Length: 169
Image (cartoon, rainbow, N blue to C red; front, side, top):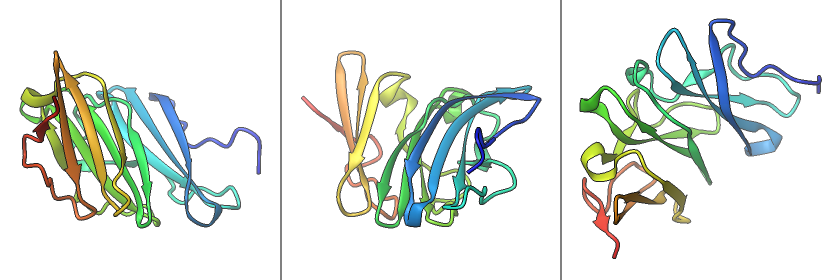
């Protein structure tokens, strides 16, 4: 492998918050946030076992929401690929926590917008975490003020605890 393989190197943007995860057959899934002339957005790239980039350019997790301010992605690996979750701040009518499922080839499985896991009025920009449900989906917990909410997202993107999740007290 060459030293310092450039996963994303656009002179018009800043790339930050990178994360790397072991993927299938020795490949690596990399997530990152970029900003520049446009608001911060979340992207991904896959590096194959031989150090080659799978995509010519980093891929947006949600092409339909590219002009939103999005923040660091958290990732859970599944038997079918990965589920990525992040917070989007603006525009306000789209603010909330989103998720996108990627297959092992890097194809987005939940459409160009992903799915909204929690709307802004339920979650706010606060601490959250995710973990596997061991069936290809995730559990998510998010703190909002003095409240804690949970959500169970299936491998097909269904919100099992309803669109508002469940209060965890």
